[in-house]
Image 1 (tube, one colour):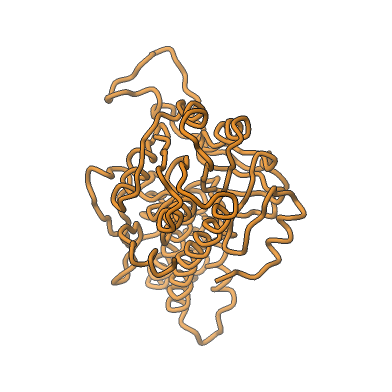
Image 2 (cartoon, one colour):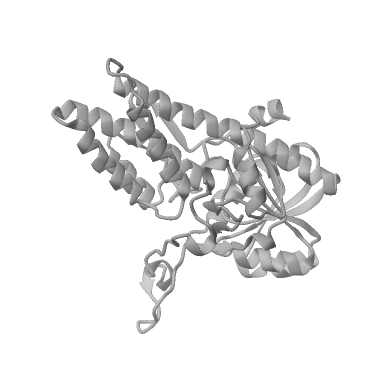
Length: 358
């Protein structure tokens, strides 16, 4: 399956070349495909904040490259460049609070600098580390795809209907995707009849990005309103809900795009299995449960403006970007280290002690 996934690769969102970071502007997809070049850490931080790049793994990869750009600029300034580099670190860490991959990648870049030998080139070492983070995520995607496909086959190997939420494909990662990577693999293996994609308001990642990615690869996809998900589970023979994650805590609770929690509740009611697919860098063993996860809230104007006009002048908006799905609603968490079925604290700890499978 690996070779067939590689052969099917058509979309990417991140490119590092000629000393610059190029990001595909996901705010204007699928209508325009525009790449933006970034040469400063501040520029990348703003790209993360403004959702030029989104998806927890892609955010972490972009931040790693941003620290290379920061080092280059600070070294050129002279003086105590590492202290100034730490300012760039803080700026990037503040760009999105929920996606733990961001902090994982930044910490890994800092650790690499701390381990640097006295006569080594810091810029070369940091660039090599960022590239390694990027390539490792791509390999993790392939491993998770295979593990997820094996899990689907274990329960039902024939063609079936799958529901997904937000965008978890190549646009959100450094490779083929997390949840969407599993769906791609299952389609290649003849186990996907149709994918139902939630539109995912208010940024419409499902309609703009997921449906676009799937259609580009010839995978049958039907777009639906978020509020239609329960009806679809009841009437369309859904066997799996497969989603990604922005942070997973030590007990197996999962923070993901707003609307995921209600999908899990509905899935349990309708007897539909619920799979979360994410690299181990998304797991935050420092947080005991989902109650400890900071939930980002975005500007209410994202809900209150339609066609550029304000609706309901006296109406407020509550616009959380993520919600938390309790572990007891999750059938399986798939990572590149392996699968945890019916996750709990003990099983998550065992998972994190394993070596990567790729």
